[in-house]
Image (cartoon, rainbow, N blue to C red; front, side):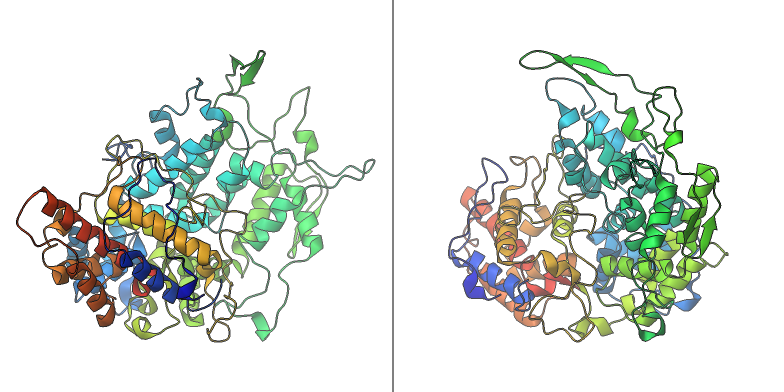
Length: 608
């Protein structure tokens, strides 16, 4: 990509009817666009939730710090860097607290922090469970609003950051579940990720396998056993993806994530998939709590709407006289990955054995841990880094496998995450995902939804919007693949840049236009709008303003050249005349311009 591919006038992002462009010099957007394209490296490529009502109880953990050497922060920038990896953002008070107690104690506190209202309850509190003329039962809009509200306003930002990372590995997409009460279904899926984000991965595997949203998304729901007369075979979708994407991956690995024996060896075969698929037959929705409502339809007739319970309860093996789901469960023997589940094994035991086999497989720890490192810290962790984190997955220090809270701590406390070497390594770090950038903006500047409704929709359109939206992956393979290499890249052999798979000339313009409007005028007709009180107080001193933004948004990683460029651009704007209404507007424009330029520059976009 080249800077001359950005048009002189970019289309307005259709976020709101009253969206107004940032009042700044005409060259401002061009400067931001050029900065963003430079980061692409030339390759194409007040909360609505009641925070006082805990639902997920925190847990107490003790981190063994003997393996880590950097357990204190000697500067605000170090603390800010840690916080931006560990959650979404940092504020002055969070930096001060992190410096006071250190990263290990900070993590222990976050794991012990209870959640606010969960996604399911938030939807109901907002009235989205009502059966009325809004027809929310057929709408994905509440699901989008729920996801953004959870990320932007929940008190447990660290848990939500880990859950978001997991949502890009164990994927269900709101775009792919076209069912009644789809928003509630995605909320239950999200709540499941949050519940286990600092829990045990084996428990997550169990609950996600029987989750209704997952059941519809990957065809576990209603999956039937083989039938010799018709030639029908069990659907293999979930069996394939639970191995390929959720646990063991495609290639046999060493404990540090490198190829076993240095050569490509398939982890499983087609026979493994077809055998495992038998385990996932016979499950269907649980309708024992269903209280349907008959509603009149426009143009005549009626429709029976189920209650939301069926997307909340796990899939089950049900038996009744009209449709015996249990009779749809295969009783054949299952042979996969060296494990045998004998014929006629009861379904619960078969499921437990199958998931235990996947959970305990030698590949699972390095396969999963490398991807979590990629989501939180760097696209290209060393084999030694992966090995250290995978070892913590294998044994949390107390003989427990799969402890995600300890894995989270191991990722963030590792010397490769905390050391300064990565700051000067051009292949260290990762591209910030667009949805994470927007959440960071909200949390950094204390933005709230004045109405408490958090009406932010699907921002997936790359040309006219953000180019990414939470829980809106285009497929089970996430927004991007962990091994993606941009075309025409200058990366070293073996290096990857996953997030660049969703970067192209259209998405660059869409992101800049979207953030220009959001930074200035907010979202939802100004209901979600930044006051920038502390920043406006510094607007007459561009160097002080940029220094603050450099710390809070970039953890002090802006180059001297970039700092000078942004400072000079802001200084050239009106904003130093005598106090008046016009001056207040000019000062705000200075702040908005500075925020936009920072959030468009390479040192921000690539998080180190």
